[in-house]
Length: 162
Image: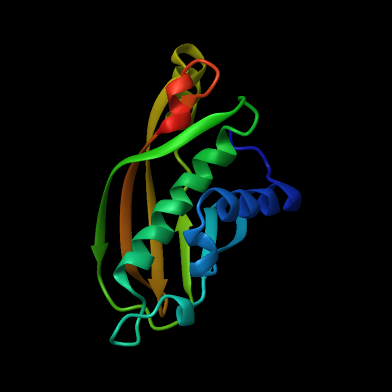
């Protein structure tokens, strides 16, 4: 049910991230790709270091949050202007990240996606749960679970101020 995403759409997502969320520029976030595994974002380690010379936990959480946000943004691209917000999340830090950071948001199941879109179309608002992983040396370094809410801007004008 997730349709193919063009290179232009991925570039537009990256530009939206940089324009709407200035922190993404400072972090050096790029949109790497979208495929059957989900949406992948990356950020250079050098811009996201902590005092131990590994990836800063806040940067890891931010990148994971933005991977989910970006996936919802792409899913809704054909459904009119929407505001996407994170409602809640849980982050588990399993091991240090010592190289450039790559976060992949797994796509929802077709059933979850269909329910999300049906609810969004009916109510102008919907929620969806997404999982993001960041790997280090081939193993999960960060596991992230987020609940995202999308609001149709035309039906919920208050969405502009959220």
